[in-house]
Length: 104
Image (cartoon, rainbow, N blue to C red; front, side, top):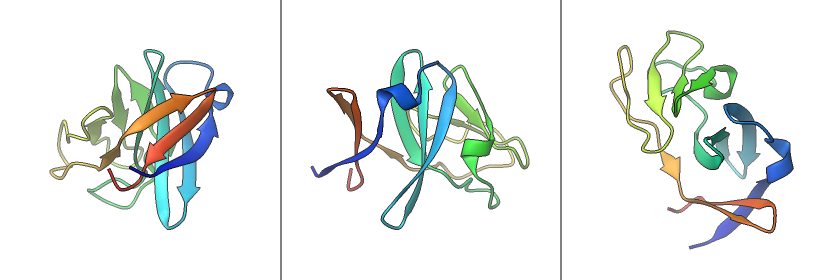
């Protein structure tokens, strides 16, 4: 695994916060939910929209364009119009740094 620092924990201090992150060629969304951090691709699989502009609640991100919902833990598409899952990435926290494995 190759871990890449994408943020620090103080950048997302409250639950249900989202931060857009660009790393290399990847557009990612970093979430904080129930005190944990999660990372997914930032683009909805249904139509081009940034998930970081959406609404995060109960571990699901809602796309701001057509209200597709995705589980941020698994990437699973939860409702129409999305039928394809989003990619999620392994995350770890080390001394306040949030690290992601882009190959994971």
